[in-house]
Length: 71
Image 1 (tube, rainbow, N blue to C red):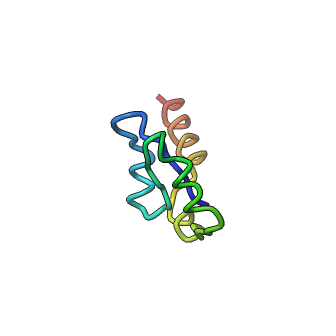
Image 2 (image 1 turned 90 degrees about the vertical axis):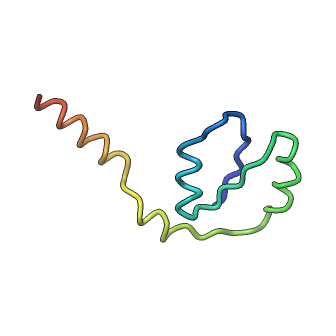
Image 3 (image 1 turned 30 degrees about the vertical axis):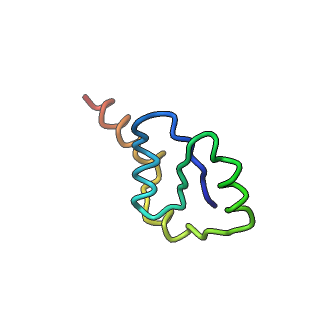
C-alpha cells in the first residue's frame, strides 16, 4: 500500500500524521503525479505493523458518542 497525495491544500494534517508514523505517503504537485506513479508502480509496502499501532477510528468515535450521551 502506498498513497500519492496531490498537495492542493497548504496543510494536510492526516497525511502528515501518517507520513510521520512511517506510512508510504508520497506528496507531489499535480503535474508530478504520473511520473511518481510510474516510479512507484510495482513496489510493495508492508504497513501491517504500522496499522497495528493505530487506534481503530470506529472505537474512538464510539467512545466519544458514549461520553457525550452520558452528559
